[in-house]
Amino acid sequence: MGGLLPALVLAPLAGAVVLALVRPRWRPWLTVTLGLGLTAMVVAVVLDVASGAEVQYRMAGWRAPLGIELRVDALSALMLAMTAVVSVLVLLYATGTSRVRGSEAFWPLVAMLWSGLNAVYVTAHLFNAYVALELMGLSAVALVVLGGRSAWRPGLRYLFVAVLGRWPTCSVWRWSMHRPARWTWPGPGRC
Image 1 (spheres, one colour):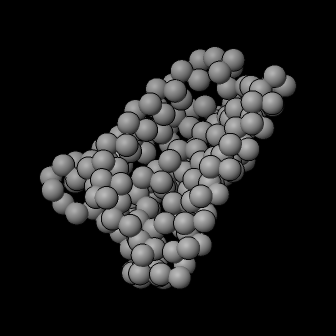
Image 2 (cartoon, helix red, strand yellow):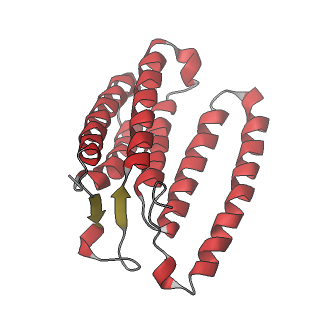
């Protein structure tokens, strides 16, 4: 079932692009449909992890440090499941009230945020975790700013804190560049 791992990251990212291009009236239900599909994939991955199977995927068959490895253990499966449940509930609630959304950009931004979260949970490579954190942070800041003019100042503060918080991650990545064998990590539940 490791073949679903890239879809957990790429499906919401592709969905964000589609949601940005379709008519605004279709966005809520397309996003909920995307969310339900992602939840079904997460359930399949969680069942595989629960059965004791090793769930991993090597993009293009290359090993690290040249390839991108995706891996799910019990902790990352739990985080994927929690994100799926909370995200679907938020999406269902947001379809009923425009006050929650702020604008029609809410739908693609939520899909981008979900993609970033999933990527953080399944990546087995330090640099990919950094890229996923960037995607997640930029999406989250954009969602905060959707709250209107009064949300711009907190959104800017959030952006500054997010960027400053990622500096140590970037420093660790740069330090580890001199040790390519250490670019991979066992995953959150195996440390």
